Structures are given as C-alpha cells and as structure tokens.
Length: 349
Picture 1 (tube, helix red, strand yellow):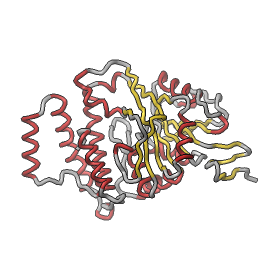
Picture 2 (cartoon, helix red, strand yellow; picture 1 turned 90 degrees about the vertical axis):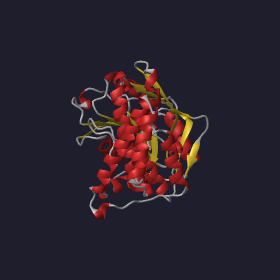
Picture 3 (cartoon, rainbow, N blue to C red; picture 1 turned 120 degrees about the horizontal axis):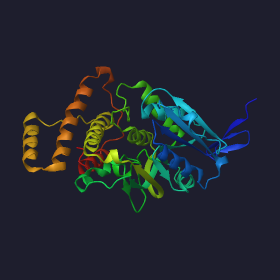
C-alpha cells in the first residue's frame, strides 16, 4: 500500500514519514567537473536539512554518463536521471516530471548557491503564496578571466543582476522576471508549462547543443502571470555564477546576443501579440542606414545583431502553419509596455 500523501500545510509530499518540501534539480550537459563539484558542494552545505528536500541530477545527453562519475550518496534523497533528448528545455521538463515536491528549484551546472538559498526560497513561498516563480536578485559573476573592457556592454547577457530590494508583479515585467539560474516555481506552473510545451506549435527552445537561443525561464514567468500568479526576484536569494573564459570571447557574446534577441521576439509574438520588424520597409531602411552611420564598435554590432534577429524570428513565425499562429497573452497593456521598454534598454529590441 502506498504511503505517499499530500500535505497541504507544508506544500510538500510525505513519503513514508519523509517530508519533501522542495526538489532541487540540476540540469547538466557535459559540465565542467570543477564547476559541478562546487555546485554540489554548495547544495551539500545548505542550512535546510537534507531530509526536507530532494536532489535530482538530470544528465542531458552528456558524453560521459554523469551517474558513473558523480557520487550523490551524501544526500539521502538524491537520484541520477538520464534525459537523452538534447536541450535545456527537455532536461527541465524531465526534472518537472521526476520531482516529488510542490516547490521546484532549477540550478544550472555553474550556479553556486548561498548556504541559505533553499531555506530563503521556502520562506518566500510561505510569505508570498501568490508567487508563481521567483528567484535571485543577487546573481553575481565569478570570472575565470577578466572580461575585456570593450565587451562590458554585453556582460548582462550572462544572467548577471543585483537589486537592493524585492521586485515583484503579477503583470509580466522583465525587471521582475527571475532568470533560470536558481529559479523557484510552483508545481501548478510547471504542469501548465509542460502542457503548453507539448501541445503548441511555437515552442520556446532553450540552449540546445551549439544553439544559443533561450527564453524558457522567461516563459515560465509568462505562464505564472497568465494563471494570475506573481513573479519576483529577491536580494536575499544569492547565487554566484561561474563564468569560464570561453564565454567572455567576443564571438561567443555576439552569438549569445543574437540568440537571445531571436528568442525575445518569439516570446513577444507568442505572449504579447507583437510581430517582429513591424515597421514599414522604408522606415526600417532609414533606421538601419542611420545606425550604420552613428554607431561604432560593439554598439553597432549589437544593433545589427537585432536586425538579423528580426529577420530570422519573422521567418520562423511565417513558416508556422496558420493553425499554430495563436498567442496566449497575459493582458497586454502595462505588461507589454514594460517588457518592451526593458528589452529596448538592454539593446535587444
């Protein structure tokens, strides 16, 4: 007879007397061993007792199977899970299926969590029951090599942020949207996201092999808002992002900028009913000519990256069957305006 039962007060599962309050899910594809070791050590040092959370290490088609390399026996409720379909989105969906708790936490294989991260995340869950997704407001880098000064306008692309007070909303705003590094979400949001990912014609694909598209974490927040829940970031939730030297190369950062810009346009089409490159051909041509004359260096490259993103994302949308050209929407209005303003200031629109 099954001894597993739902405990509404704790927002958790009881399994044979064990209380699982949160499922910590690491999605990893060919991780750097020294980085994954620090990620696991930080989880091992959490102040939340091990018997109150579970640990899932999702091996996303790594060349060397992680189960043969990494011993998780230090945690009483840890499991290796193999997801053969390549891509961060596929790994996250697998983690959602495998997790037992009502609160899920996604940790990238280069995220070092502060010792109280799990405990603080659960405090937010209890004090903000209306919150659907929430995450770090203090996501600071640890660079393997010092980035070149001329590339600093691009470093925000590496999911770096720091705020001095909580930011939250229930109408999507990019400034309150938690990034995938250390993002918490409720089971209801995860289930809705999985359903949408399975059934719709315009899936938002996260990193997959050499592709640098993204946006799955942003879509989780759109899903939360569409369900009437809130999203937020909290400075008490602290993460150190380990950034290797190759991610500070000029070519990588420019490819990352274009990948994020493409993803941004697809998300805005899907959720805000906004088509990319909606200017007239004449106005667009004049804008391109003006920016070619005015901009220099990295700023010019960023601008032309967005021009390419307009074209590529529009091609993806135009190729959709007419039956799949549906959008969900989260109310538009202030949310749409705030989203576009934030993305414009970041050089993505």
